[in-house]
Each structure stands twice: as structure tokens, then as C-alpha cells.
Image 1 (cartoon, one colour):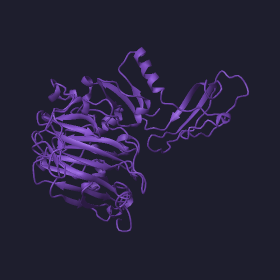
Image 2 (cartoon, rainbow, N blue to C red; image 1 turned 90 degrees about the vertical axis):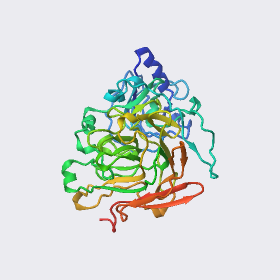
Image 3 (cartoon, one colour; image 1 turned 120 degrees about the horizontal axis):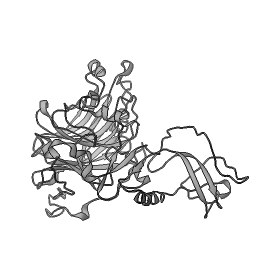
Image 4 (cartoon, rainbow, N blue to C red; image 1 turned 135 degrees about the vertical axis):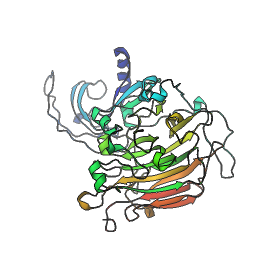
Length: 460
């Protein structure tokens, strides 16, 4: 069942959680009760009520239907007693569509981060001391430089696994990985390693045949020292042609020389090889040695310390934007707390956790480069450019509700203030396939539209 949830409790305590999960109501349907319609649930099926029944058996065809937002699709059997409206008792078994993740609620102190040798005696910090201040248009700060408080932390963010409950305080949600997933992300596996502006996530044979398989459209600043960045990112679910390819949109915080690059990264990604499906997912990544032997996605290796019990790294993001329709966004902030040696991650209103600076050599004090943008893998199947889309799959010129965008680009300066990045450079490596258009206005500040369809008459 999609989004199954496990918790580190005794059996009787698990029962309490099952009661909570059962509060996610699903209307029972029989034709004679069809006048009771909540306008949300829709059904198509057959039934029988010609006698007394002590069981039921059926063979059900398995599919993976597409769905949007908080919708679901299921196929099941019902064994029912009662009127079908108020006093119905039912036993229900079948399959359901949400993302198939199993979420383990792991005690904060037992999460993978503390397997790292540099964090063996680490004291967990449950919240930052300070949050970056934001400037009004007149250059004045919105508030005084005040400590972060409990009232500023954790507001609900919807992920599909929430359909089956939440993790209790004192635990963090960890998306369960199979042994094959661990093998994919091991430090010796080149498939899912990254590289600066050329993430080496293809099989070795593919990389040797096509070393320039990664294509980007992005914006960058590098004229200062930086203590973080914030951006609001338009969320889409771009089609990916081959399971070895991906499409992502993210922020990069970078420091150090190319030979020993340090990065902190966060955004959304569609990556079938890594996650086993074509869902849009929240992700993070880090490395301290130019992607050679350190770092990983999400919590698949030790390093990042999660403190939040509501958001699962690697979890499906829902809902996503539609062309000429509703637009959905996420806001990501990464900043270095001026009183702690920690890089904190904020997703919407949720403080997720932090990267200790002890993981890094060149991100111990600040960053020297900030980047925002999209990336795809082009594996050139049959010698043709991939049809994998970046962002919405439409070029930047289509603008709002057509192209994907980043808006309100900001950097954190030495006074712990969010401000305009200054001079921004935009780069589209394959502009006939995916492009970028930088703009500015009073509402969105510095922003850009970007993306494209991949293969087209001008991109072969």
C-alpha cells in the first residue's frame, strides 16, 4: 500500500496510530446509496447482496494509475454489513495508487547521520539560533535581529505518506530503501555520483560514450561571499524518456576548487533509476570532495542531521503545476547560522535539519558561488537527443503558466540578511533544447523562466 508508515512503538501504541490513520475517510459505495454523494469520491464496480456471506475472493489486475495532488486511485474488495449509509461495517482489501513509499519513523538519535565518524559525539541541535532577516524594498529589515523561537517552527506540509499518518515528536521520517537502492548510492558506484555542472549519474559505459550527457539552464552569482540562499521554485512533473535519465530543479551552494569541490544542494527531482517511479520528489545532496567519495542523496548516507518529523526527504511532492492551469511552488532556504557551525535547511515553513560544517573543508565559513536552475540527463538513445523535459517542458518565452520558473532569488549576506543577489549571469548550455530568460519586478524580485521540451526540430 502506498505510503505505508512504521513507528518505533510497542503493539498497543501502534494500535493508537492505526486509529489515527483510519480517520482518512473513504466513502463506501453501493448503487442504492448513490444519492449520498460528497462530490469527491467516484466509483465504478459491481456488487452482490443476494444472500449471507462469510468471505470473498477475487483476482485483481494491477496497474499504476496517474493521479494529481491529494487524489488517489484504488481497486479493492468490500465485505460489508449494514445499511450502506450510517451504520456500515466494512472490511476492505486491495491496492492503492500513492507513491508506494514505506516511511520509517526513526528516533532522532538513531538516524543515519550519526554513523558518520565526524558525528559520533555530536550534540543534536533541534532548531537554529538565528534565522536570516529579509529586507523591505526600502532597505529596512522586516524585524530586529532576534533569536529563532519555537513559534517559528513546523507548520504542515503535505506529502503523500501523510495519508497514512504522521511520525510522532522525537522521531524523523526516513524513506525506506532496499539493498539495491543502497548499492546504487554507495560511494563506489558511479551511477549516482555527481560532478559540478556534470552530474556523473549514468552507467560508466554511457559516460565514456557520451561524457557531456548532462545539460543545464541556470543562473549564478560569484562576486561575493555567501552564507546561504533562498528561492521559490515552480514544481512540475516532467516526463523522463528513459529510467537512467532525470529532470531536476535545484539550488546549489558551492565552495572550494574544482578538484575538491564542496556543495550543498536541494530541490525537486524526477529520477526513475534512483526512486523506482516517475514521481516528483524533494531531494538534497552534498559532497566534500567533488563527488568522489563523499555525499549522497537525502539520508542514504551519514552526514545530514534531520530534526523535522513532518517532511520525508525523498518523499513525493504534491500537488504539481499544470500547463495553462494551477501553479504550485516550494520555497527552499539554506543558510549558515551565525552562532552555530551548521548549514540549516528550510522547506516552506518547515525547518528540516542541518549539515554540520565539520563535513566540509571549504564550506566551513561561507560559500563562494550560488546557483539556481534546471538539469537533465541526455543519454542520446538511438543517437537522438532525449525527449526528457526540463521544468514544464516549455521554453522560457512562454512565461507564467507556460514555462517553469524560479522567483525571489536571494542570498544571505554577512549580517545574516536575505538580499538581492546582485549581478546574475544566466547560462543555457543547449538553448535550442532548454533555455532561460532572466527578469526582475517589484513582486518577484530577481526571477527567471527556464526549461524546454528536449528533442524538437532545432534540437536533434
